[in-house]
Image (cartoon, rainbow, N blue to C red):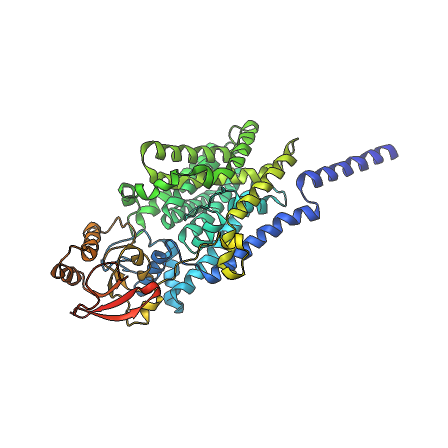
Length: 513
């Protein structure tokens, strides 16, 4: 009995030692990934306070402005036209109603959206990772990989989870959609394992549709992930469970065309996005090279299980990304997160797998995360004044745009039409005015080409004064925003009156004639 007791005690001790060493639950080691993950989340929360202006912030602010003004018939968010817009999603409708009900300013509501989206994303990552591993450090390591395991070259785009990219897009619908997608995948895996009932799968179908409606590109990523979770489910779903999956899919497909603010399926034939997305296929190794560690981890997972959901997820995303490059459909490159996310998560999970190379892989991953963090160190500049940053970090900082709040102190009112070039047109509608031409492609605006040509005609050097005045009258322009060298009517033209001066000599003119 004593011998058996000693043997049992020794076995228990060895088991505990093994769990501690392989599971990473030793207190000092377990705290390291948690501490760094919390540090990055805290950094992002501080960034939200600043809400740096770059990229597509203007269109999302304009969308909330229009929904605040008229939630039922908001019209085009950028120009004075009664057209639908894919930016009017379930998420932005909720934000617009929040703005109308509370009276909060648009940029305050965007900060609320950012906090909610970030919370949904962080909890979604943890939720999803826990369906693969219960190790204490798996979720925070996965979050670190998603934020830092990119490349030695900086890359920013909505729907891509790099730290600097997320700092600029955290208030966008893409962040909400990504958070929803992680929860969708986690809930779907759990529902498949437990053979959940109809109510669960129907709810998942609605969540899938909301994700697609809120950010279409991320919705495709979410769809590939959901398909991978079904194809890789263990045990294999029974016929009854697959019937419930089909029912959830059917309900989601019914929700999509029922959304009243724009035609989801009408977007399938939209063009004009290929050239914008060509850059997704350039500099792949500088932008995404560190994620190859995750591809190696996926190869190991594939050897263990040919139906591993992360492997299938990666294969679907990589295949569509490659097809887009080969066929010239560069907008398909927006599906790249469907390859990056499973690779990054696989890299995190591999650290906690038993094997002779585990420690070597963990060390290599740690070095890659440090390099990825250094690449994106300029993100700190959105929180710390540039002058207080060390020289090498300050060199990586990219100052955000200044915005056009100064227009509103010059008697420009909500709904006024402003003549401006493309770059100002991406920001001015955020404050309530319209522009002649949209600063972004607009699939549902029938005269988009004519409006763009009108702006080019107004500012072109060979255009006569009469032609410029005709353009202003055609679109009911009340204000013109221009730098001194932009062209257009001269500043001393009797049809204009100077009304304000903005950063770098930009001038606001009131149209008086």
